[in-house]
Every structure is written in structure tokens, then in C-alpha cells.
Image 1 (cartoon, rainbow, N blue to C red):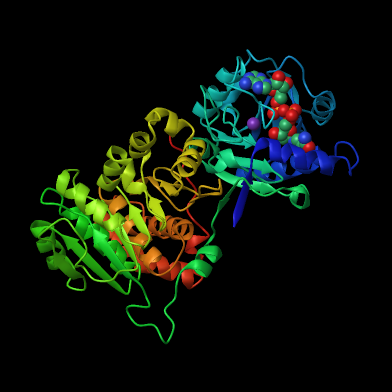
Image 2: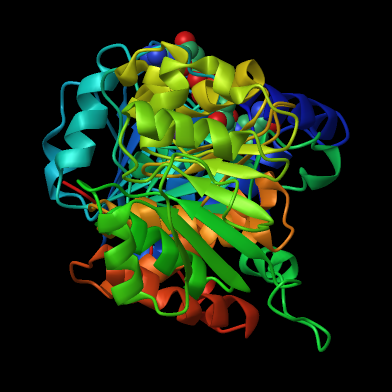
Length: 498
Ligand SMILES: NC(=O)C1=CN([C@@H]2O[C@H](COP(=O)(O)OP(=O)(O)OC[C@H]3O[C@@H](n4cnc5c(N)ncnc54)[C@H](O)[C@@H]3O)[C@@H](O)[C@H]2O)[C@H](O)CC1
Ligand SMILES: [K+]
């Protein structure tokens, strides 16, 4: 499990650790880690051109000492001093090793650099980058060389991932002591690129993490595996109330996701048109064609998926009310969420609820502004879970899952290939199948997002995918998780998007 912390949490731990060590020890550990990642990226250090963007705080100090180490190995290092002051000892060390200095206006070197080290600001930053930092951060991101961010990309809020104004777009972020939440949550995660952690001895002093990202082993441990005594009922029966005469595909995809994710049985309930489509695609599903908007005669299920393609008319509303009146966990997605936004009384139930909105659907549910949600995803998903008293999975780049208690997880397997129609319906089916097999809403949502992301990567393999292709790849994704294949751990790094 990868754990991440807010800037305040890191600062607290650093203070405790620093008090036990000779002055300057942590900065030297940070600089050694930074220099080693830079050397690895450069391949050949001798003769390479390295530009340091140096701010006035300790983030700049880290960059200067890393620059010293690279200069000692023969790199041509130039420090662009951007702040009103500069870490003095670090600057002396760089100059002694043969490095040079340039003013903030002298930026010709940036475009010619093989590697730019962004040491403008780290966890001590507040608010949008001021000049000349903002201009330098943008110039670095647009330059052809590699950009290595020191601790966090300057301009990204380390605690939230928020980006107000300019920020440095990094190839790699070398972060000190522990992951910062803002490196795992978008938009910050996009700016961070690949994140490398440098051990500076902070671990024993860290508090409870702010967020966690499940790893393959965690998911393997949580995914249900059928035992010798399992029959289809024990493996979990999922009910799916989805699709309408207008949207038949959503029903097909949700049922497909559920069957591929190992539900013992899927009971589909819907109107005539989607019933015909589900029957044609999935002979395995047990189908009830509804004459009235009620699931009373559908038979026993252990969980429901409600909403994909359901429509929002009176019939859909009554069907939603009937599903939510049951005493089993319900996952609500898509049109089901719109119905909840129109009639919040539907949510008055005691059995568990998992909502799976994207930012627009969450905006409708909570009244928050969609752009505000996208800018500060973690805060909004936590607020929604607390306010509504249910588990909320916020879809989108870096999918987040929050509990009413404030506990939150971020999924690391997603990719931009998944941003295509119908993949959300498949996710409902996968997470619903996990709910039916007995996972809590929190675990079903986080494991579902993990498997879905992995299936997307397998289905895409560097090319466009379809939602049906994602559903087809779900068994291979589960196999990857449970068989210990290295694919899940060696996820392709996020490529630099320009
Ligand atoms: N403390 C430790 O044990 C270690 C810290 N490391 C590194 O230090 C930074 C944090 O350093 P700090 O001096 O606290 O703050 P920063 O360098 O991040 O920035 C403070 C500096 O920047 C100015 N500033 C703040 N906001 C802005 C802005 N929006 N625009 C322009 N300028 C801004 C402010 O005035 C201050 O002067 C941490 O990230 C690590 O990189 C270690 O490496 C290890 C130990
Ligand atoms: K930085």
C-alpha cells in the first residue's frame, strides 16, 4: 500500500526527525537521492547540461546540493537564482564544485539543458506561483530537456494536488521522505510525472496517512476467491437494474462487467428492449422482463447495481425506489445518481450505499460547482461522503474513493484510454460483483477501480479501446493481480502530456 501525507503532516514528522540529527543531514540525504535519480536519467553525467531553478527556501537548497554532486561528476551546472535570497551554504558548495550562476532573467540555458531541476518551491509554498517563479516553471515545462521536480512540482499544492496558475510539468518528481497527497491526486499527479521516493528516515515519525493507494498485493488479498464449497449463491448474486429503451448498451456493459468480475450469478431486471439485448449478449444472465417498475419478483440478490442507462422518468424513479427499499448494498451510478439528485429521500436507507459519480454527477448531487470539484477532487469527494453518509467513488483521472469517516483511497491503475463511452457501466458491474461477493463498499469500490484500470490498460495496450473490450479484459486483469504477475506493479509511467 502506498501512503501519502499532507504538507503539514510531513513537516511535523520532519521536525521530530531533524531534532535527532546533526544540522543539514536531511538536506544531504535529499540531495544524494536527487543526484542519483538525475544521473540515472541522464545516462552520462559528464558533459551534460544541467540547469537548477533555485527558489529562496530549502527546496532550492536541495537543488543546489544535488547540483554540486552532479558538477563533481563533470556536469555543466548553471543555477538560475529566482528568489530574493538563496541558500548560502548550498550556493557555495555548487560554486566550489565548478557550477555557475545566472539571474532570473538569464534563461537561455533552460532551452539548451539536458535536465532542469525544479527547486523553486516545495512543501513551503503557499498559493499560486509568483513571478519570476511562474514564468520559470512554465519555461521549464515547455523546454525540450527532462524536468525533475524537487519534492513536488512547483505550482502544485503538495497537500491537495490543486494547481492555481502556472506549475512545472515534470518528467519525474523526486519526493523526500514520503509521498505527498498532491502527487497522487490530479491535477497535481499529471504534473508530477513518475514519482520516485527518497528515503530520508522519516517513516517512523509519520502519522496516520492522509490517503492510501492500494497496491497489487492489497487487492490480491481483498479479492474474493471461490472456495471448494462455493456454489453460485455463495459466490454472490448481483442484481442489475439498468438500461432503458433508449440506452440498451449500458445494461449489456454493466452485466458484462459483473459476469467477468466473478459474480456467482447476475440477475438482470429491465424493460423489453434492454432485456432483448442482454439476453442476446449474455445467455449466462438470469433475466426478468419487468411489467411494472418494481424488483419485488426478481428473486434474492446479495447486492444491486442501479442506474446505468436507466433514464430519469417516473418509471425509472419508481424502479430506483424499489431497489433502494431492499436491505442489501446498492451501487448507484449514472441516471441513478440523477434520480438521487432530484429526490434525496431515496437515500434514506440503512443498508450500505456506494455512489460512483463523475465530477458532473457529483456537482448535481451536492450543488458544488463542477470546475471546483475538478480542481480539488479529494476535498469534494470527502465532503460528499461525509454529507451524504455513504461511500463515494469519484471517477475521472485518478479515481478517488472516500468514506463518511474521511478515510480516502486513490487508484493508480487508471489511464486516459479509459475516458471513453461505456467504461463507467463496466466499472459498475465490476464493483457491484465485488459487493455481491461480500466486500465492503469501500473495498469493492477501490478494488473495482483497480481491476477496471488494469483491464483498461490490457485492453488498450497503447491503442484506443472500447468499453466491451475492457469488460473482456477483466478476467486477465484479475489473473494479473492474483497470480503475482509483475504487470500490475510495473505500470507504464504517465507519459508527459504536452
Ligand atoms: N525541512 C526538512 O526537514 C527538509 C526539507 N526539505 C526540502 O525543503 C522543502 C521545504 O522547504 P521550505 O524552506 O520550508 O519551503 P520551500 O522551499 O518550499 O519554499 C519557501 C519559500 O518559497 C517562497 N514562496 C512560498 N510560496 C510561494 C509562491 N507561491 N510563489 C513564490 N514564492 C513562494 C517563500 O517566500 C519561501 O521563501 C521541501 O519541499 C524539501 O524540498 C528536504 O529536502 C529534506 C528535509
Ligand atoms: K519544486
